[in-house]
Every structure is written in C-alpha cells, then in structure tokens.
Image 1: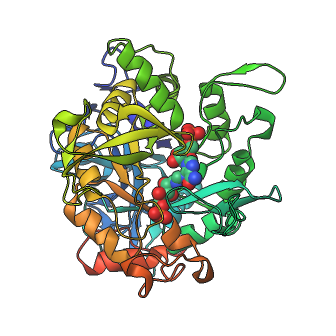
Image 2: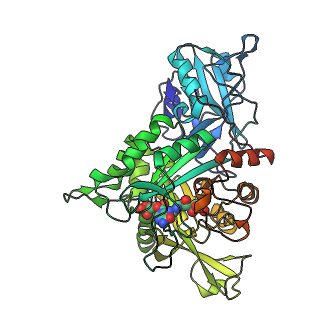
Image 3: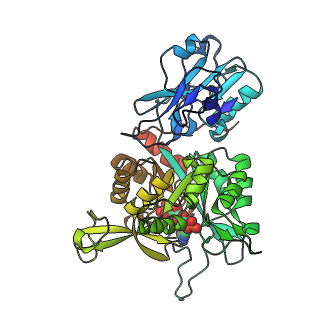
Length: 491
Ligand code: 1PR
C-alpha cells in the first residue's frame, strides 16, 4: 500500500523531479496542478469515487465509498484519462479539483495506493485501512455512513485551540478578544487566564463534531521554551491517538537555545512535533523576522530560515505561516509606503484607507511590514498555506475581515485559512460566499461556554458562547448549498 507520495512513487515519474524515475508499477506520470484559477497545494477533503462498485452485493473497492470525503494534501497528481488505467486491469477512484480530474486511489489485487491520507480521513479513511489490512478487496458498503454528496473539494472548517499555562501552571485552552486572554477586572494587572478546558479533551470533542482539521497554538511561545519542556508534544501525542484529522501546531517554531546552551534549529523543533503527531507546523513571529531580512537583502532567499529548511525537508504543505495583523488607518494611499486598500469600514477620523501591519509575539509588537509583503515573501520561501488572523476582529464575534481576506488571496497562490471574528454560523457562509478563501477557522465561537462570553456588539443577544458546535456550522453551510464533508460516525 502506498499513501500520498507512496502512490506517486508507484508511477513512472513526476514533473516534480523529472530525472528521478518512479517504480513504474503503474504506467503514467504526475504533473503539477494548474494554479491559474485555484490554490496549489490542493489541501482538503475531496472524493475518491470509483467507477466500479459491486452493486449487486453492495460492496465497494477497498472500502472507498463515493459519498465519502478523504483528506488530500499535494501539488502533483496523476491526470485521469478515461479508461486508460482500467484497460490495464486497475480499479481507479477519481477526484476533481477545479477542472482537473485526477487519480485519487488505484488498486489491483493486493496493491492499493491512495493519493489522499486514509490515516487523516476520519472514519472514511479508517475503513479503507481496515479493508486493506483485512485483505478484503471488495468491502461491504456501510449504508449508515455514506450519504451521496457532490464531487470536488469541500469547504474546510478548522477548530483552533489557543493553549497556554494558566496561573496555576496547568495547560489550558484559552481565548480572548484582540489577543487579551485574561478575565476582565478593574485592576491594572488583569484577571486570571480564561480556562476553557483541557486541550486533548476539546480536540476530541471537535473531531467528533466533524471538524476538518484541528489547530493548536501555543500562545506564550515567545517565552523561551526549552526543548525538554515543549508543552505541546504530549498534547499532540495524546490527541493523535484518537483524532484522525490533520493536526497543526504553532508557537515557538524557530531556532532556539536549549536550557543547557545547546543550539536547536527550527527544523529540529518541527521534527519533534511531526514525530509527536503533527501534520503541519505554523510559524508566526519568525516569519515576520525572516521577511524583514529578506526585504533588507534585496529579496534574496537565505536558504536558512525555518520556513525554507522545514519545507525543504517535509514539503511546503507541512508549513503554515500564521499572520497576526492589525489595521492601520490612513487618509490616502500616499500617506504610507505600505500596500493599502480602500475600506468600507471607515477609520475613527473618517479615514477611507488602511494597511495591515504585521505583529510578532502574539500581537505585542507591531513591525514595519504589511501583510502583502509578508505573504508574498513566505510563499517564495516555501510556505504552503497562510493562517490569516486579524487582531481587530479576534474574539469579536462580528464576522471575518472580508476585505483583508480578499486582498490577501489576490496576492498569492497558496491556500488561505480565514481566521478571527466568527460569531455565528452565518459568518462562515459570508466568508465562503464573499471571498475565495480556502478554509475558515473558528476558536471562541465553538469553545467558549455560555458563562464566559463577553457581551459584544450586535451579536450579544442572539449568540451565546458555546451555543454553536462545528456541526451547527457545517449544517448551516450545507443548507445554503455549500459542499461540506458529510459526518461519518467513527469505527
Ligand atoms: O509567534 O510563531 O511563536 O506563534 C505564536 C502563535 O500564537 C501565533 O500563531 C499567534 O497567532 C498565536 N497567538 C499568540 N498570542 C495569542 C493570543 O491570543 N494572545 N493567538 C495568539 C491567536 C489565534 C487566532 C484565533 C482567531 C480566531 N489566536 O487564530 O484563534 O483569531 O478567534 P475567534 O474565532 O475567537 O475570533 P509564534
């Protein structure tokens, strides 16, 4: 069985590196997805629909059900040509990305290869693994679990857990607004860190509610974290035992010095996270610092940055850059050297323009660099995805910053995850309906219980924290005609 690059290796070759031959077990070569009108890498949940089913006996090829969705993450694929591989005796399952149809899985006898990751595809993926391990080429269709859905990539919903130690030293999930995670009090020192629960438990809950991905952010990582004490390692290990969707971890991915004085590279830190169950690492502050150097260096890549070294070792799909911008209003585009946009939400002095300033250390320090400069630079360095936060919107429950998202999408080809501001399921409909975002992330909306909810703006009477689950968001999107991954109960 080959998974992802394991499928790719079974073919004759790939445009990714034409001089290296594949194993040639299956005829054909891979080519890169066309990124003219879509994001590349292709990341998310897509079909693996076989032309052959044993409908008389309700059995499907290696557990692949046409209504199920599977998690893909890749830039190269085998284009599907009608009947070619089937004429060589293979059974082929296909997926559609934009106008490109490609091989999602292929098998014959005891050979099975999947372009998607079954180990990250929830119950649908576990069924494929089970069929292969039991050596059952024609596996019984699970009637309960596979309603027919449309073909193509689904809208991806990500649950985000901001993690830090509380004042008693316990690791907890927390959430604030505009990055302030302490309870509001009258004293200058602020209240306790909001405690919304245990990270592993909450991750499991969101998985069961149908989250397509889970992101953990260690939000106090700017404090030096000795390697021996990386708090997220155990969280990842325990989560990945029972949660079979992609896990991203962020916070503190940078070159660091351990407590005994040993230098530890960002690549080594990332390796530890991958070995503990992470599928992607998310880089925040370090991405800003290296972009500043890149600009100073006349746009020459150093080859040494965390983004470059990690994506060279693990592929760009494994590297997310998390951006923490703040709006800066200006009277006219000429008032700043930065990339501005004309905004429908005027500034405090009636300003019609704004630019988005990147920050480091969890929004504590603004830098002289704008979001467009950052995302275009990190795309060149090898980032595979952008997690686009917005400090002005964070925890506000007033909806995503659609202007920022559209402006960022125009600048790059890699996928963008819209983040900050989700308050009601309709905000997800809005962001998918009015931007071309590839995914949307929610934190407070799905994690904060009723009693912890700050009364904010227009949503205060209608929306109570903890009132909505990931499933509510997906049901809402589905009812509005958006393609989402159907919920399949676990095996
Ligand atoms: O800089 O590489 O060490 O990474 C630190 C990471 O921690 C960054 O990704 C940064 O975004 C995150 N972070 C730091 N401080 C905070 C904070 O809240 N005090 N969290 C913080 C940012 C992540 C957001 C949030 C959305 C959605 N939170 O993604 O989850 O705004 O919130 P909402 O749905 O409730 O509106 P480094």
